Image 1: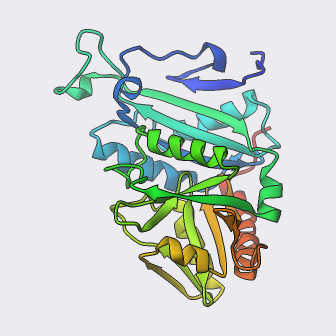
Image 2: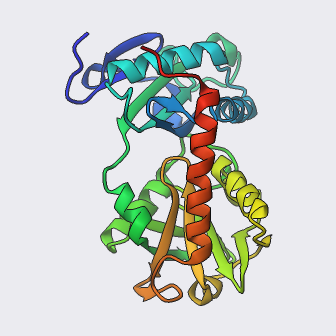
Length: 302
C-alpha cells in the first residue's frame, strides 16, 4: 500500500488513506459526541505505557456503556502496523484511539438496546510537531480563560465532547499562546485545554485538585511520582489565578507534549521568565523514565 501525503489510518479493521476514511452519518460520535478517546506518544515507533492507556479507555467507555471491541493484543498489533504504514518506525508520533457508538439510520437517537450497535474504532497517527523540542527548551506562553471555561459536566472522562477544549485552544492561539488554562465557575484553576497544570510555590510542587472538575491524566500521575522520587514536596489543592501569577515556576504535562515550561502567563513572566530548576529536573527525570520504559514495550518490528 502506498502511503499518501496525509497518512494512513486504522478504521474498523482496515488501513485506509486518511483522505478516504469515512464513518456513518449516523455514528453516535459524529451526531452526539457519544464516544471516548485516548492520546499517547510513540517513541521510535513504540507506545509508552500502552496497557495503562487502554485500561483507562475501557474504564471510560464502560461509564458510557460502550463496548471496546479490540483486546490489548489486537490494539498493539494494529498500532504496530499503523507505525509501519506511516513510516514512523524510527520517529516519534502522536497516536489517537477513538471509540464511538456507531449508528443505525432507522434509529438516529438510540436509547435502548445499545449493544446492537457496532462501535466505530479509529486510530490516527501523526509525527510529533517539530516545534515541540524548542517549546520544551525555551518554554511557552499561556493564558488564563474566564471563569466557566471548564470542559463540561463529564470532565473526568475523555469523551468526544471536545468543543470547550477546542474553543479554548483557539482563544489561546488568537492571543499568541500555546496553551489555555481552564477556570471553573467558582474561579479556581483546573487544567490546560490539553494538559494538566503544575506550579512550584515555595519549593512545593502543586497541582489543582478536584477529580470531578478536571481530567487527571496518566502523565499527571507520572509527574507526581517522579517528583516524590526526587524528594520534591507535592500537594494538590485549590489554586486560583493569583497563585499562578505568584508562582516561582509553572509547567504543563501531557502524554504527547511531556513537560513544557510555562514562562509567561497573560503576557507576564512566571518567576524570572525562564524554565525553573524543578521543571528542568522533572523534564530530565521524565526522559529517563521514557528511555527505561521503552525496552519493556518490546523491540521495534523489523
